[in-house]
Structures are given as C-alpha cells and as structure tokens.
Length: 235
Image 1 (cartoon, rainbow, N blue to C red):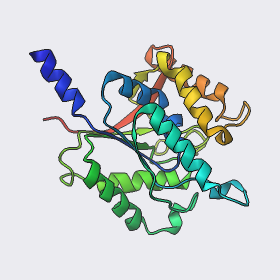
Image 2 (image 1 turned 60 degrees about the horizontal axis):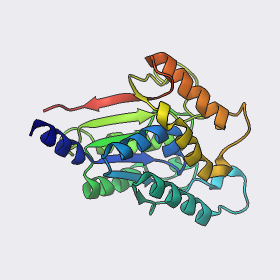
Image 3 (image 1 turned 135 degrees about the horizontal axis):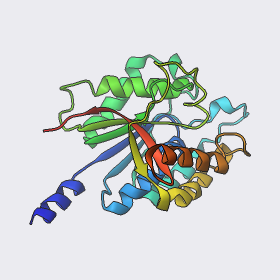
Image 4 (image 1 turned 90 degrees about the vertical axis):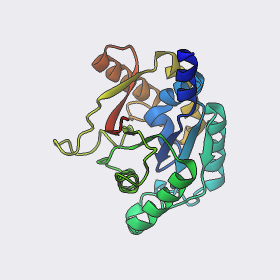
C-alpha cells in the first residue's frame, strides 16, 4: 500500500518548462525530460514565449517550420505543447515586463504546475533573462501554493558566454543522470537542425556531449544535466 501511495503521489506531479524559444527545452534539459516521461511522470507541459527566429539575420522567420519542429519534439517526449505566444525574438526587452508576467500567470493558472524549470536568470540572451524574471515574479510566495520546486537550467552559447562574476555565473546544485538519455537527447535536438552548428560552436553535437560529460564529472556520473534549485517548499 505504501508503494501505491508513493506512485500516486508521483503521478500527480505536474511539471512545466517555461522556455523563451523552441530548442531551449532540449538544450537545457532534454535528457531529464525524457527521463521524466519514461518514469511515468507524464504530466509534462512545454510553454514557449517566442518562436525564436527573427534575430538570425534571415529575410523570413519561417515560423511554420519552427512550430512543426516544436510539435514533433513535444510528441516524442509526450508533453503538452503551449505555443500560442510570440514575443519578439531577441527583443523581449521591447515589451513591458508586466505583459510577459501576465502571460506566464495565465498559463500557471491553467496548468497549476507543482514543479517549474526555466532559464538561468543571468544568461547572455535577453529573452532568457526576461523569461526568468517573468517566471520568478509570477511565482512569488503565496500566489501559487501548489508549486513545490523551481529550477533553472543552462543553455549552451548563452549561459556560459555571460561575463562570469559571483552574481552572474550559473551555480548548479542539482544533477540528473542522463547516461541512458544522452543519445536520445541529441536525436531530439536534431529536430531543430537549423539551430546546430559545427564544433567548436557550443550548440553542436560535440558541444552537447562535452557539457554532459563535464557536468557528469562534477557529480560523479558519466553524463549529467545540471540545474540550480531556486526554491523548494516542503510540507
């Protein structure tokens, strides 16, 4: 009976990933997402705040392709996709922060997550920083009593490219073993083929493997994804 109660408790967890752009979810925690899905914690939600194309120097944004890629990835993970918002890519700071906060609050009230993952608050990418600020403001204490944990993740070519000071550096304190999920993570990332570049660019197959290996060495694992636990509320 105890085991049944524990399984029911796990099944009731609702995990929400709030990311600025499609592909951030796989770069930041693709292995963890796959692991959560396989564990039976299938109540997974992906919320994107932008399609993430306009800053790439292209004449056309090709939003339909980006949507199709996000849909394909969410189906493979088994997550519910929320891709209705489209704040301007690489220009979230051109929008009042309150507007982004209100959008996040709208989805929080619908989804009622018990666990949230989002961007590191000091990433070089302005969209990532403002996504974190919107989420962190939205989940201020007493607003969402069902929220138990808030984590941040790192994004290659954004988190590590920020000027490293004691107030900006990503300081992980939680690690997830993704040895079995590293190759599937890379296959998912290939859905966003246009976001990959040849090594030594960080967002390359080799770059993804190198980071997983480095985080694994930090935690005594072969391959890992790292997170910073920002807040945990225990009963």
